[in-house]
Amino acid sequence: MTIRWGIVSAGKICSDFVNAVNSYPNKGDQEIVAVAARDKKKADEFAKIHNIKKTFGSYEEMAKSGGIDVVYIGALNPYHYVLAQLYLSNGKHVLCEKPLCMNTQQAESLIELAKKKKLFLMEAVWSRFSPAYIEMEKQIANGEIGEVKFLEANLGFFSESDRVNKKEYGGSAVLDVGVYVLQLAQFIFKEQPIKIDIVGNVNEDGVDYTETIILEYNGGKRAVLNTHTQLQLINKATVYGTKSRITLKPPFHFPHKIICSDGLVKEFKLHQSKIPYNFENSAGLVYEAMEVARCIREGLTESPRMTLAESLSLAILETTVREKLGVRFNCDIY
Image (cartoon, rainbow, N blue to C red; front, side):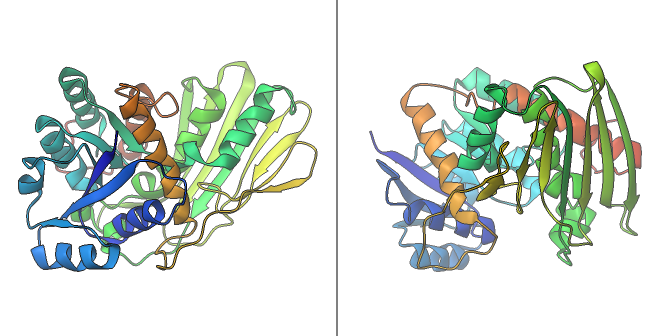
């Protein structure tokens, strides 16, 4: 069974996703067959670079077309909800870039629609499918660092992009990079925090550009998470247990090296591509595509490694952070 992908938008992250899948030698029976953009010329240029057969000048046209099983949505944040709705409503499975939606209410609505349609939906938290994350999870499960008590994670980049800094484009540190630190805490502790403390700053456009998030869990467990969109941080994460620790080396949101519980460095090499990537370690995007294809073939409507319940939990945390900092979008209800 060939899994046929449609690509929604022709921007940088979509280019990296297609490049990662097309250049991976062991991708199995899946093919990228179409791309849609609001500007047909951009879709045509994208298709020429990536050798995609079919192009569409509107998202609606591709949604209503046949021959596509699943779409990857890489449009700007404010369009995730409406585009995912569009494709689910037209019978397509959906892999949507993070954040899944702009707020909790949208995430609840989208998840409800996917369940009603009995279609696959996943937030593209590619970190979960990293070989380094899988190795870390194995070492923790084996008790190699003892009981996990503390997590420290930093993720910050300097960006002048309107996508990050302007409210009309869905800019927000917690939505752009904060999702990665929050999902890591979720992945490590596997429970809801009992207390959330936040300190942050907001720019002149009303968009958060940095925050320190402290999550408290039962049993004295804690996560200290730092985000920034105006400073380059050392983007690593360390999980501390009662016996030892594990460090995900930069970039921790998709690392290719970890310092194991015994202090040794383990490397996970990524495959090569002839086409340059726009973002660091983007070759790793193929692993989430592999998971989506596996789930669809097995008749699953969500991934056990990135469940819909976890995406809803992330949306709640992201919305809580924004509420505490006074960052509001037009789509917000609170």
